[in-house]
Structure formats: structure tokens, C-alpha cells
Image (cartoon, rainbow, N blue to C red; front, side, top):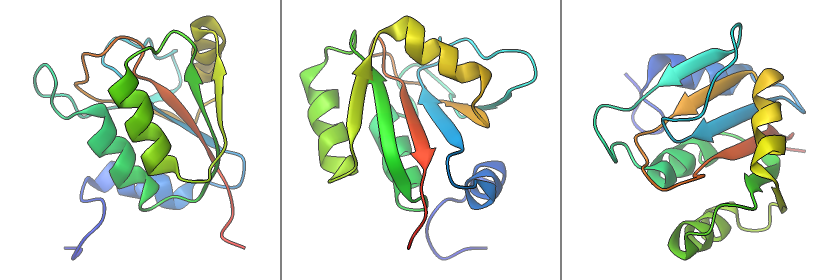
Length: 129
């Protein structure tokens, strides 16, 4: 048992196994996951677990060199929280259709219970040096 950090066995294993440039998507429960791409469904009810707490837990474990969200994400609180969590990590906004295209090459999609429209983020793994 770990003292802190990610306790979800598969999510922790996935994060540790990401290489430079690999992408991990954290999403609302409605984002489609293509056949052949791993889906890790954390959702247990509407709103739970929330998008930001899941992103926060992953960011505590993963070096991220770039993040991408949809231009359609308009919830100011979610955007502000993302900026706070990402710190100096560059954040790009692209049309939702472009973000959805990233699901085809992502290592995995982690679904949260978030019910905010377009609450999805692509996290591109970096290196710690």
C-alpha cells in the first residue's frame, strides 16, 4: 500500500509507464473511447469523482509538458482551476472535434464523473530533466 499519490492500481501503473510524448486524456463520462484504446472508468455517480481532483492527482505523479482542452469548455471555474493546477505548463485550446481525434492515439482515457460540458484534457507526458 502506498502512503500517498494514486491508489488506483491501473491508473498508477499507466502513469508510471508513460514515455515522453505519450498522451493521457482525462475526460467527462461522455467522451467516446475508440476500440483498442484503454478506458479507465472512475465514475461511480454523477459528478463523482470530479474532473479537477482527478487531474490534480495525476499531475502530482506525472511530468506534463503540454496540455490541451477544447475551446468549447466555457466553465470559468474549471478553466481557472486547470490553470492553477497546471502552473507553467502550456495549455492550448482546440476545437472539440480536434480534441476527440486525440483519443485515437492516446495511451488511455480516464473517465471521471464530471458533468461539466467539455471537461476533457489531453496531457502530454514530459521528462523530469
